[in-house]
Length: 347
Image 1 (cartoon, rainbow, N blue to C red):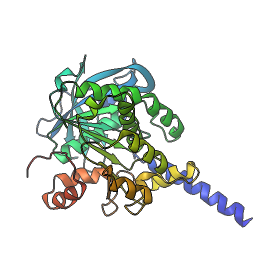
Image 2: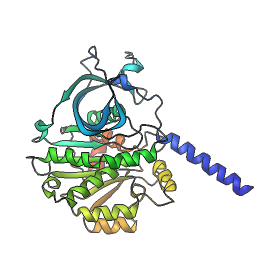
Image 3: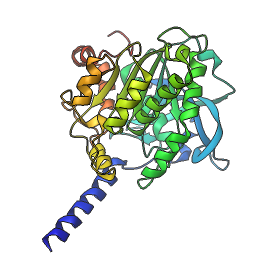
Image 4: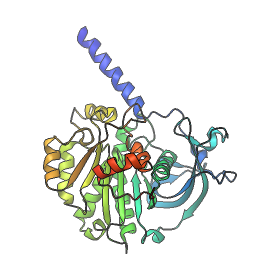
């Protein structure tokens, strides 16, 4: 009887963790992607170029989780409204904290992204359980708070955007691998050496590593040479698999940065669902695989456990990193540790 009771408690704990992974007090609907022509000009904004293999929703301004056979490109201008005394309506904005709202000011479809070939770019690949609009506002938050000078590029793969879509999201990320590889090849065409920073979160980190592996196996060292830094935040990748992936890719211009935390509850859940196989994003420098890869100059692990977590799952601490970019005191300590090649605006 005690064994059954403990098993029930474990199952309830897993359900709680699963729910907290998706924790969004109020998830924005597709309507937030409709431009707001009356958006105040005084608030900080950022222009995001998006590339997605989601299907466009014909009945709304959004994208669905259905898979498209080709990439679609757009350009969004997103504003951060920090003064909640002005009400913009939940249907027209997305809220991350009690003091922030994000809304679309402008939106334009693009036939290609050739204009980005000679720019420095930061490519952000979101994780499990994200809708298109959530990933758009997430990268906007990072770009605005981090005061990045590089052009932010969002790669949004066809995540289900649901709590129960974990397995489906794994398949969707695999489906998107060719498209991310294509995006990197487009950005790397005639680009400068080290002009691309590649940032993947959670399942998106797995997708990033798979795309790099594919570039290596197809002899696209020319594209790999355009990648100056790879950053994996809370990577949801089994340790042995990660080791094999990285050794296939080989040494890049800079070691791959892992932003890890041993108390990441989402990765603990992922490990349980995978038969208790540990995830690379939840280990520290003392792990044997980590020590080997670090000694070979392949990776560097940065422990973000000391940063406060913005979510109950403790899975999105990389957002705090963006905030640290805009605070000189914290930035000096944290970025020197990480060796990141992101370029914040000088204070």
